[in-house]
Length: 464
Image (tube, rainbow, N blue to C red; front, side):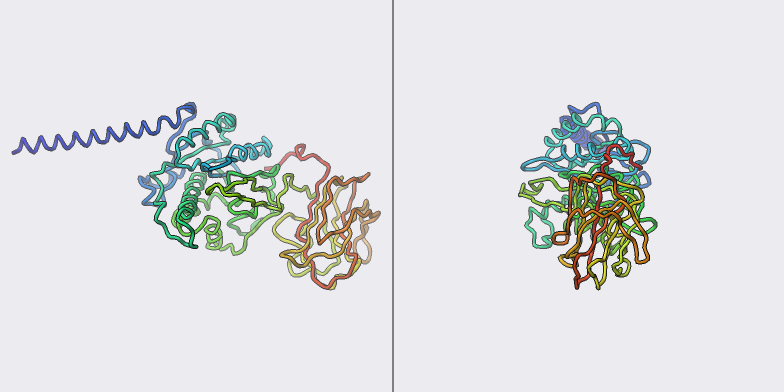
């Protein structure tokens, strides 16, 4: 009897060993082809947040995400950067824009800016053939960025995802759309958790965007402009999940939030709730937008997508240092500076608004202008109905206010808007004035004044 029991135990142990050996071999066979053309890059499972206890199953424990991430390409540097740019990409039925997006990120940034930046790309599709092909293309085109630690490529195996079918059909979405948006939430949870230790700040992009030139320097300036004011999210695009900025210290919470409520609603809805839960009631959006949606076809079913951000400019305005003056009565805290600061605020002026009232920008130094944009009104009301745009070569203080001397009329507002490119002036100017040419009975909002100077952007040394 004892011999039979001993033999049975030996057989069971042998079967267990053989089973584990089979699983190990099959897993190695499954993984090996995926990286055959990128062997020179080290990859591994990378838990960035070492303070956490080891996690074996991210599906059962939403607090453990980073251990599920596989680093496919790039080198994680020990020195923390200023900004992480994160984007997730999946296989599209039609055009792919990922490589163009990466090219825009790098080409629109100076080398000094890139030294303060790391880009993280999550290849989030379960089609391993596509992952392999896309990885190879990235390695071929961006090998320098990979070797310098400016670009990281990651992937998460399908086994680490929670259930993606049979989910709640909130908003009466079709099952396939629920699956798509729920997986997207989990993708972002993995992405932001992985990125949490890489830099001081994190900005989310999509894989089909164009970037404005020097966007990192612009972001740095806008963060600085917030001073000690509390914030959770700063927005640099009005579209979806493009251009949303977070402090890296908030990313672990954001990852857990996205993972916990992944099947409830789309990611942009969840992000609004995350912001309000952390006590930022209103969005803080900066203009002009720094990122533009360029994709023609959606990543969901390849449907046509015409979304564009009309606040985007490829070349951000210079808005040189200036003092702002107006004789229009100001409503509450909507000061004249708000119109020129390129922030989220705007100038709001009260009636009476009479012919001859002005809004004047007095530059600290003479400037050579080549592009001017003025936008008034908000949500279809409070436009400045009738006004001329003038420039002058001298600023004079008088008993009644400030004068723009030697004024030359560039043009008039049309439906509350003014834009003139390739401004042709013989000399530098010291002031820009909006002069009201007719009485109006409604209040006025001047929400955006942007000035581009003739100085070339690439000659400037960005401060980061």
